[in-house]
Amino acid sequence: MTHRSRLLAGAACVAALLVPACASDGYGLGYPDRDAVILYDGENHTGTAVPVNGPVADLVPLRFNDAASSVVIYSGSWEVCENADFGGRCEVLTGSVTSLRGIRLNDAISSIRPAGGSVYPPVGGGYGSITLFSSDGLRGEALTIDRNEPDLARAGFNDRARSIDVRGGAWEVCVDGDYRGRCATIDRPVADLRDIGLSGNISSVRLLDRPRGY
Image 1 (cartoon, rainbow, N blue to C red):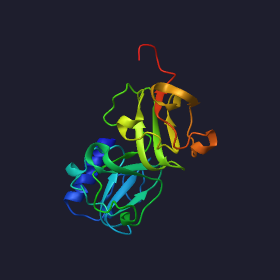
Image 2 (cartoon, helix red, strand yellow):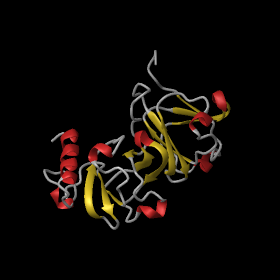
Image 3 (cartoon, rainbow, N blue to C red):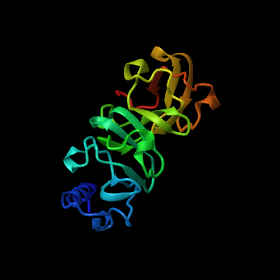
Image 4 (cartoon, helix red, strand yellow):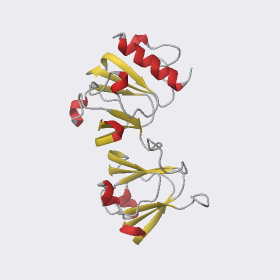
């Protein structure tokens, strides 16, 4: 079964107002697929459930907009946002959450995607991406970039990054705009930017190893 058909199957379960046991054919509760996450409309993983296996820019078509109260994460980290298209305030979840009230996102999630995965919609050519997190340990608010960004202030993320996840490519991060000042090259996750003296001190990022013509 394709990811698309699996997602539609999850939506069908919601439409029928069935509990998580409706998951079937290797998808959903009891049969976790790779990087699978399940949203519940009740706390403590109860009530109607919607399984998600990839980026969902708008939960309205799944009839689950502003409905999630708890989350089960089988693997990976997931970014959940209060607005569609991954806008507004976002949080990265690295484990299951029994109550989203603790992070002020109860009944307030409109989009979800794997943290550090591809930007949705893709805008940069697919040669790699970097995700900046506002807290150490790859937690907190997140900004995913897959193209050169000379001024992070435009994205509201200037001097805010405290950890970084890298999904492809080698990236240069600099303390000043336009790739100036002290810079460092990063090609793997950095859980705490204090280790390289750049916590809360990054203003521009750019991809270094990209094909010619990019």
